[in-house]
Length: 71
Image 1 (tube, rainbow, N blue to C red):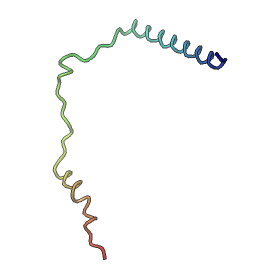
Image 2: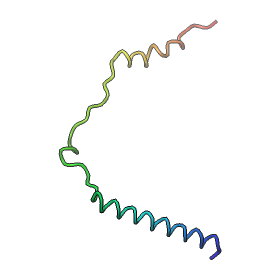
Image 3: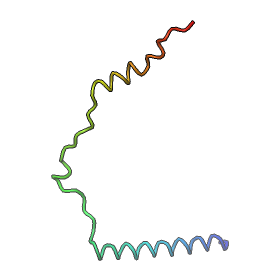
Image 4: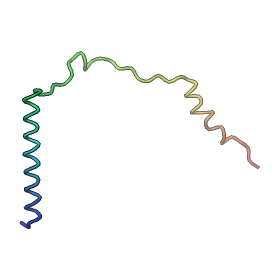
């Protein structure tokens, strides 16, 4: 292997070792992450409500300038 490839492999190994040590430290301090509970998972969420005035404006009034008669 060339010197650059060896250097890049060494850097990757050092970076992986650093991340592994940081991960082990975080696990020791905080424990493993858990997902949401069943109640949190099944909780309903509401979507943003939009008034009809806004929809009518965006579908009609916004494009009325195309209906202007030109000479």
